[in-house]
Amino acid sequence: MIRINLIPYRTARRESQIIQHISAFIAVIVLAALLGLGVHTMASLQLADLKEQTMVLQQQNIDLKTKIGKIKDLDSLRTNVERKLGIVDDLQEGRFHSLHTLNTIATMIPKNVWLKSASDQGLDIKLSGLAESNKAVANFMRKLDQSAIFSNVRLGEITRVVQDGLPLRRFSLTLARDDVKKAQVSKAGSGKGS
Image (cartoon, helix red, strand yellow):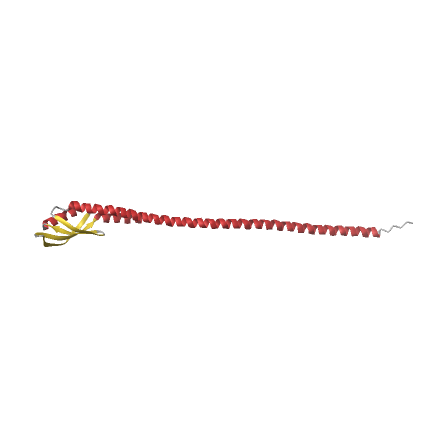
């Protein structure tokens, strides 16, 4: 009878299965390692992209802050220029205002009254001069008081003097400028509204 030994076949088969299982296990481990490495590489690339985008955004932020600083400088410069233009406008207005005031006084001086000085004291004007008589001074005061731009005409002093052999009256007057008061009230009113 023929005897066949099957034991080595089974052992070889088992060894082959163990090798297949170990190979499959190693392949799974290698595949998992490659998959993990791929995921890590992708995450690293995304992280690098995000870092690059962050740096670009930070640079844009710095540029925008610089532009905002320039805009703030322009706003302060514009405010300063507007303030200076307002001062120039006030000076221009004041220049013509003083001219108008002196012209008005000059047109009201009677023939028998002579002014020696006129001084601007803000809201008031102080005049001093000579006149032929008290009546001439009173006439001058009445004309000033009836004008549209002067009010509250007050006689400071009147004294007799002799000049070049002629008897004259030396006088001083103080009068308020209504047009300046009105201008200040309108500026204060418009300043509160802004």
